[in-house]
Length: 218
Image (cartoon, rainbow, N blue to C red; front, side):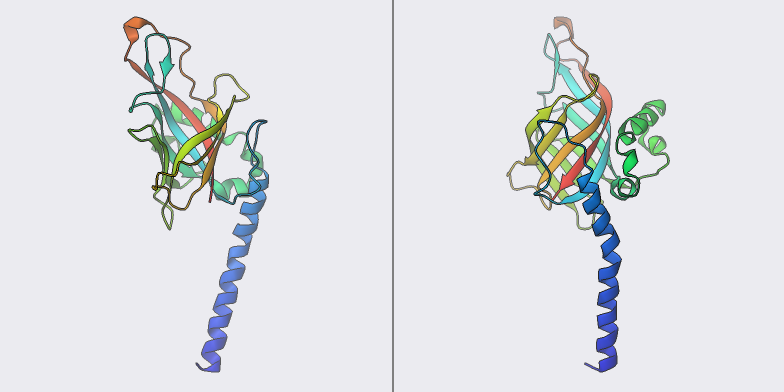
């Protein structure tokens, strides 16, 4: 290898390393700002990969007395938006992003495209429940793609009564996860089912709009 070519390759490698530093530093700082409620485990021994803003619905089925999430069609169904860079640059927005985007989603009659207002966040993937009721995070817009098939480990009531709980989830070890090990659901907005239903409503379903931040770890 010529001295000139060696020098050029070395310079390219140096520039690539330097270029990656600001994002790596900001994501580490962002991880230190993750909201946590008492009862959720610390995030200090894992590495933050994405903060995904989920906007969609929580599906429930009436069992004759209350709305529950036990059927294959129940659970969350949400589009995931990549809020990592935005929140790293604007950490003061962590506490308001979910409710602001949910309000836009409801105002647009659940039209996700119209609700993705400023700041416009790139689509990251989808959150859904499988037919076996496994909460799944499919990060198909990432490079490389990533996936977390999760199991709920801990739940803590949200600070407001009309918001779904904050959660800690980990890989359920069914062999389908790829590149992600854990997730926190925090900063939830709405999504709580009606308080009760009647026997005449048994089997009926409701879809309640919600938003939440999913802090995804590798």
